[in-house]
Image (cartoon, rainbow, N blue to C red; front, top):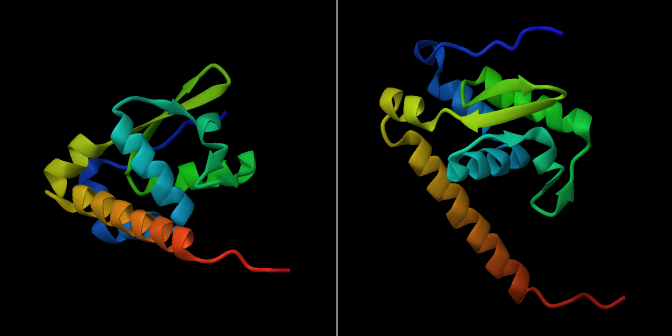
Length: 123
């Protein structure tokens, strides 16, 4: 097995963070990890935002988050456990992660309201 690489916090860039979080599945995963305060296995995210995510796709999402410096991953037996690096990121870029998480929540709430207002289509 290849060792997992995590960038030094000094090598993490705003551009890398924004790129990693530009995918709706990745940002949903990250918001969940950041809000939980603990480590989660990859398999706990097989369903994200009412979508079923294949394990191979999920692995790619976690790799992108890890390489951007947003999460720390650790192998525990056959499972991979992931935790947010919010504390480190807050020191490097004060307020950035909180602003992104808040914007995601506002957007999600807006979409949920719009979905409830949308009339059911007739076949």
